[in-house]
Image (tube, rainbow over all chains, first blue to last red; front, side, top):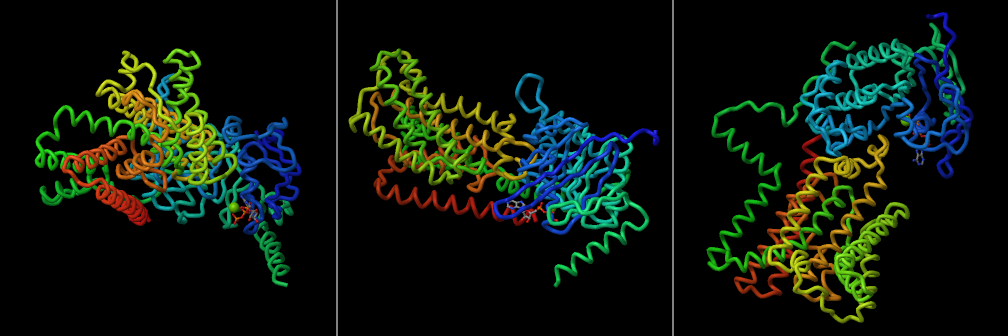
Amino acid sequence: MSEQAPEEVLRIEGIAKRYGAVTALRHVSLRLQRGEVLGLIGDNGAGKSTLIKIITGFIQPDDGKIFLHGNEVKLRSVPYARSLGIETVYQDLALVNELSVYHNMFLKRERLFGYVPLLNNAAMRREAREHLAQLGINLPSVDTEVAKLSGGQRQAVAIARAVSSNAKILLLDEPLAAMGAREGAQILDLIRSLKRKGVSVIMIGHNYVQVLEVCDRINLLQRGEITYDKPVTQNSLEEINEIVMREYRTAAQ
Amino acid sequence: MAEEVLSKATDSQDSPEVPPAKSQALWSRILGIFLKQREATIFIIAVALVIYFQASNSTFLSKQNIGLISQYTAATAIIAFGEVMLLICGEIDLSVGFVYALAPFVMYFAVQDGFPLPLAVIIGLVVSLLVGLFNGFVVVYLHVPSLIATLGTGLLLNGITLTISNAFQVLTPGTGTRFAGIMGNDTFSEILWAIGIGVVMQIILSRTRWGLHTFAVGGNPLGASEVGVNIRLIKIRNFMITSLFGGFAGILEAFRITSTQPDAGGTVIMFNAVAGAVIGGTALQGGSGTIIGAFLGVVVLGLLNDGFTFLGVNALTFDIVIGAAILIAMVLNVRLQRLREAGKQ
Ligand SMILES: Nc1ncnc2c1ncn2[C@@H]1O[C@H](COP(=O)(O)OP(=O)(O)OP(=O)(O)O)[C@@H](O)[C@H]1O
Ligand SMILES: [Mg+2]
């Protein structure tokens, strides 16, 4: 199995995105293998979230191409990207405070009564409960308003939502930001188990130690371009630290 | 995979209550219902008002007066149902009272042009829907805040109504027919329409994707769109339904009073509808609200209006009292929302 030729699930070529005068992404190219966990790191404002939002179909790039399993695709909307197996945990979590946990988990993928266009709340409640239990996520109740959850719990709900459908590509924008060490470790475990099932993951993280622990490969995004692309090895941490230090020093001058 | 408990239970308000002394639990329960269920509070206020007015004048609950109250309430309530949808998703429609005036004139001229009355009603409603579509388009695609956009539309519609009617009232067609009776002329037909529409809208709001997405769009527009909710579609739909209800309420009223007035509705009925919604617990900042609450809110306004007239309170005094009451209700609405949010942190 390990001898199998790597199967490319996602390839991005020359993606560019400008916001008025700000160039968020200049020319980004990357690829992602089946069952690979790719760490995407970079300074604040480097364009990481922008890249994630392009792959998830939320924003359209000004330039560049996206290939899924070798076929060029136009990711024109979030539901379309999702129909192709792309799921996301956004940096802002995209949860609605006023709605319950289960309504949030099923937002835009609601369960109905067959052809009767009424919400099947009982089914959504049950599925949400089962799914959270499977992931070892413990909440007071799936009926709780999301506003009443702690930061870590909210993050857990957002992650549970993203992995609840059969995602082939999972995009995680700082999934551990609001989590404690132990909760974070559990999410890393979850990522590993998804990887074993063949799910490909792009993970953004500020904490390089956590990122390196779970990732196979690291891409560094600097000023809208990928400037570093290497498999994770023993000395990745030092290498990355050095590059980042160099960036700091040039910035300081 | 992760076997352990991922996170501790928070100090969530709806964690199972530990019952202290029984009576105390009951009291805090009741208090909780009042704080949470705005509908319960407003219902009790409505009942108290009925008792008070009935005690002051025993003909308050006569069939005739109940008919009057129901007629006053019905049209405003129907409009409020639309405003609830809009307010929840973070918008408002100030033009709806002018659609209310325009739609029966459209119907009138359609009949003049030889269309059968039921078809003329439909034409009036289609025009109302188009006004809603226009409002939605201006707000959603041209990014004009709805407060300004619909104010503009309202003025525009008012001008159109005055122009096509030459500022003269006309007789509503079909007066005396069975059709006109069903469409508002029978004493209780208007309130039955309002209740029927209210039931359907409450189901739409709390049991369909449209409703769920309306809450999501008002609660967290960016987040909702990030998961793929079509914000534009939801907002445009809610503008359209509000306008449709405005036109329908106007047509019902035209049948009821058998004449069609160019200056009917306007900002007064719109403001009463919004006030009813807000009194009934719809958050001015969006994200929460109910149809039932709005209905009860409008009923309370209707009771006050009728009761004050009954007590012989001067109309100008009445405006001062109602205006102040509505403003206080709105301030409370915003304060409560703030308090709730503070409690969540
Ligand atoms: N909607 C927007 N409108 C205008 N500018 C934007 C928008 N979104 C992002 N930008 C800009 O694009 C650049 C990249 O932003 P992005 O959010 O992708 O950075 P990031 O790498 O995710 O940063 P962080 O680590 O802080 O999350 C920033 O300069 C940002 O200000
Ligand atoms: Mg970011």
